[in-house]
Structures are given as structure tokens and as C-alpha cells.
Image (cartoon, rainbow, N blue to C red; front, side, top):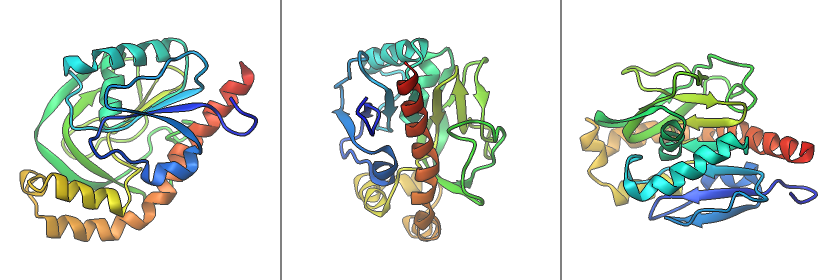
Amino acid sequence: MTDQYPRIAVIHHLQQPFLGNAAAPLGPVEEHFRGELPELEGLDAIVAFGGEQDAWDPALADEVALIAEAVERQIPFLGVCLGAQLLARATGGENLRLPKRFLSWEPLTVLDPTDPVLGAIPAGAHALHWNQDGFEPPAHAVEVYARPAGGRAEGFRVGPCAWGVQFHPEVDQAAVDGWYAGWPESAAAAGTTEEAARVADALHLPSQAALSQAIFGAFARVANQLAVSR
């Protein structure tokens, strides 16, 4: 760790990787792209973002093993979308294919306000779900957010310092525009239209910087506190 920032490794899975609204609250990070994995020695924390892959893809087995070791060694971990699905897989949970693609802004209802990372979110917060797969956390996990309609797990903590969220607090306008361009069939597959989805985007995207500050900022503080105590 430096005098000011913890050493955080970010694992990207997307062909068009981005940090979006997570960049400012995380501070300087070491970025690893599509198959590149960090060494755990000397790391203060790991963030794994979403991607097109399925969590059960054999190509991700090494990352699953890395996450399991990080959890065992109590290196703070935060998984977003695919990253959360990999965390569930690494700690004894299940991965599943949703009945149909889920593209929706959903309200976040906190079940555990004492959680140091996911517990404090802005009032009335909504988050974007752009998912084809979901997960069931392991039995020993703590679910921090209530599940939306359909019963999908939303956000959980496993062990003292590993978290996963199914939604995308990091998204900004540029990222969403890229997703519509890259996956033009997604809205129809989710039972909506791009026009309708963009109406909801316009309503909720302006609040995502605050949501990212709450989640990623809290995670960076936890990473820093644990690094200092080592």
C-alpha cells in the first residue's frame, strides 16, 4: 500500500472494458484484462467486473481459484455481475442461466445496514441489471439487499471482507451506449425495447456516481483499513 491509496487490482472481462463511475472512488488501480490475473502477494484488494462469459466457463477456472484463495486469506474482494457470480462459485454457491435476459433498473432495498460496504447507499437508489446469468450465494453468506421480483440474489457478503453485487453501479452513459451498440438484441431478448430502456436510463443514470461513491468508496476504505492493520 502507498501512503495514500491501497493497492487494488481490477479484473476486466468485457471486450470493451471500462471503470466508469468506479474510477474516482477506487483511486489508482492495477488493471488486468481478459485472462490476465494479478498475483495476490502484496495486494490490498481485488475488484472483478462483469463480462460476456458464463461463470462456469472452464477458461475462468483459474480466476475462481484465485478468488477462493483471496477469500481464504481475507484479501478484500468485490465482484460486480460476472464477478459476483464467480465469487458465489468460488465459495460454494451456484450459478444459473436466467429464464430470459434481464435488463432493468431495480430499487435497492438494504437488509443489513450495518454492512461496511453495501449497507450505506443513497436513499431511493436504483441500479442497472443487464444480465443473462444469475447466482445463488453459498448458505453461509449474508444477503445484504432484498431480491427483486423473480427471486434473483442481489447483493451478498461472504466471510468478513468479500462482497458480490448482481447489478452495475459503475455504469455511465458511455458504457451504456456501448452496450446497446455491442448487444443490439439485448432489449428485445429482455422483453422491452431500446427506446423504453433508454427512458429509464435517462431517469437513473445521473444518480449512479453517488451509488458508486457509496459502494466503491466504502470498499476502498475497507481495503485501506485492513492494509494499515497488517
